[in-house]
Structure formats: structure tokens, C-alpha cells
Amino acid sequence: SARLKPSTRGSYATAMRTWLRFCLIAVYPRIDPTLGHGGDLTTKSNAELLTMSTAAETIFLGFATWLSINGLTSSSIRTYITGVRSTLLDWSGVPLGLSVEWRRLPRLLKGLKWIFQESTKPRIPVLQQHLLRIRGHLDFAKIDDLAFFCALLLGWNGLLRCLVPPPPP
Image (cartoon, rainbow, N blue to C red; front, top):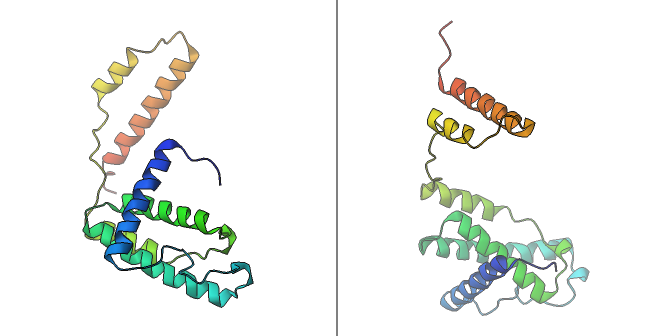
């Protein structure tokens, strides 16, 4: 597999430690993504692969729920699941082309995000004083600075227009 950034490897390592803890607590004896079906997966029928994938997804649904109960956000849960699934597939040697798309897990993550009312951090609006401060750092003798500030002003004015309700007909 391609080399991962150190921060990604660290996240995946944390995810794997959490996965192993979950498997011990939930008494799942296997950490194999094929759920112990093993063997040469290229010889499995599509129905067998779908059954194995559905069983694996069910375990990951439990893992996602457990992570949510333990206070992780849906974006962290998504990162953990990606890390664990990727690592297990690497360990097992299962070709990625054989993996089946999971449909229930994205729905669960969306539901968890909605239930726990996760929202983005409130953003500070861009005010005239911010534009004046940016202008102070630009040299209008340079065409790039002039073009940047023009684009900034156009965008800012466009956003202002979006905030003002249209006049009555």
C-alpha cells in the first residue's frame, strides 16, 4: 500500500488499539475482516462475499455505536473505521476490489451526527475592518495584489447581497 503520513499512521494506530479494546469488550474473537472465512477470496461467489461483508459491516456498526457512546464525534468515528478497515484489509491481503460497498454504516454516522447535534464551530463574519486590515498589507502597484483585493471585494459584496432579503414584488 502507499505510504501514509506520520499523522495518519498515528491516527490509524490509535484506531486499531481502540478496535482491539472493543473486540475484547464485545467478545468478538476475530479481528479478521473476512470474519474467519479465510481462504482465497477470489474463489468466493458474489453472494458469499456479500454475506461476509454484511456480517463485517454489522460488527463495524456496533463499533461505531460504541465509539459514539464513548464520546467520539462522527468525523472521528469515520476516521477510526477507515483506519481499522484499511489496516485489517492490509493484514489479510484481501484485494480491495473484492470489498463490497457498505450502505448501513454511512446512514448510522449521519444519524449519530444528527442525534448528537454536532455542528461546525461558529464562524466570525468578515467585516469592513477586516477588509481594511487586509488592504494595508497589499501593494496595489502589483497586479496580483490588485486582482486579489478586487476578487475579495466582489465576493464580500456578493455575500452581503445574500444576507439582505429581496425587495417585495
